[in-house]
Length: 414
Ligand SMILES: [Mn+2]
Image 1 (cartoon, rainbow, N blue to C red):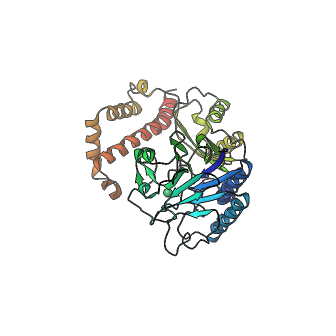
Image 2 (image 1 turned 135 degrees about the vertical axis):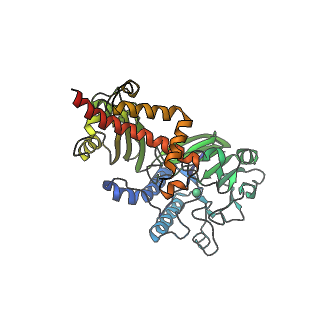
Image 3 (image 1 turned 60 degrees about the vertical axis):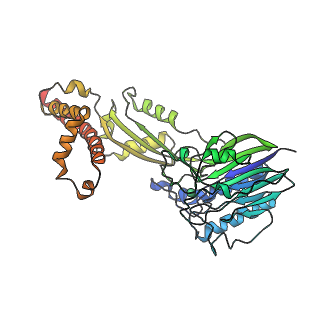
């Protein structure tokens, strides 16, 4: 059998929003999802893709806007013209509903839209069997993997599914719809599981179980490279390759160890090094959220009357399309432990804070004393949540004290 290339994408969320945290991004963000789809088509043409697997949440909602429907209709026509078969397994955002967008989508040769019963598409000329199933609601609670029919004899089986794997959910905001287990997938008779739902591209089991990730991130929380996978097949999966293609890349960097960066150029060099690499094949713009906190020789740069000026300078130097800067947590390059020895207000405050950080009993006592005066919202939190919030508040108070009191009392003493 000759080798062939498959494109695996998911979570396109066509018709869904892309955040523009910086006003300059508005038009780029508004068009980013459709542009990502265009890039999938170009990639398919370049790579002579014969099969496209779209693992759910192709649309952001079960009643997508007309622009989204048109975009997909045109894409499907383009793939058909290339001779590529397309298999879609609807997800929780775009479930297969009777009378819905998928149920009424016109049938076409080489197009398979899986319904909630599950099924398979036989592709004898490729020696493949593609099995899949669609979500029947926005909150499927059962494991859908067992509904995929096994490949007939003589076919390599590929599975396409929108599902939650517990180990990949950690640290994400994805809800555990259609939960399944890695063992369930790896024991099933499929050479590949092309999954959707988790927006971070990843090989859960090398060359076997893959989350495509979304081709375009939705907001600053979906930072890092986003794109789709090219899967090379020759009897079995021989290689997989991630192709970053998002037009708008979100990046999220936070530093609290800024003592070595003594000049603005040094700070810029550090940030530049940590930015995600540009996707060489496509033009892309970067929107960065940058958090700067802790002691820094540069802290006074951000205390000026025009806080927008240093932000604009950083944005320009780093060639960013957007920048969200949080520098309020910077403080003078001081040692809080040494300052705690001082006999003044700052010293006493720092001692109290140090004690609250190290002594859970003292923090609990403080919490109990504050409890009566808390906002009703905060009173509804559990005690542990209130303690955690107090801890983070104390950190902020420390930066504020170092910024304000040290400067004030320091100049008095001088
Ligand atoms: Mn999903």
